[in-house]
Image (cartoon, rainbow, N blue to C red; front, side, top):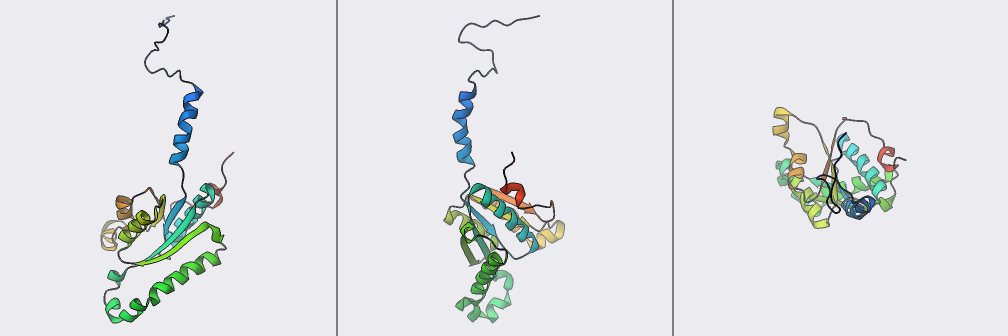
Length: 192
């Protein structure tokens, strides 16, 4: 049997004798890191963005955060449409229609209006508008879906989610479509 003796005030390397007091001192720092007050959810009205919206609702309820819903009208992707119908875009008919669709989505799902901070519709390149909105609004977390494109389809369709992850000014939670069934109660009810 071997014993190690140390002089008072000196501890062997790797031994932390600070006890529970140091853990308590670190707890407020960790809690500050997890303060999520504002969540941005890009919505393109697809099934996968609906799954991301479900995650966002659960996070908002759990953390007491507010949601900002954002839809981006991709004018560049519309090509000739923007040139053919400039009055619609100029008058904001398309943008107003998307705004109404987001508001209807919130009402139809019976979501507490207190969870929704803003509903925004912008036009431009999706990844740019998403990251710019996050920065301008001081967003704490972006919850976004991915369609799971791979190979040539990924190259042709672009990588909006990938670009958001690279350029976002805050953490990004990416929800893969159909990866795992998710219920709102998993995150909204803390485990005991």
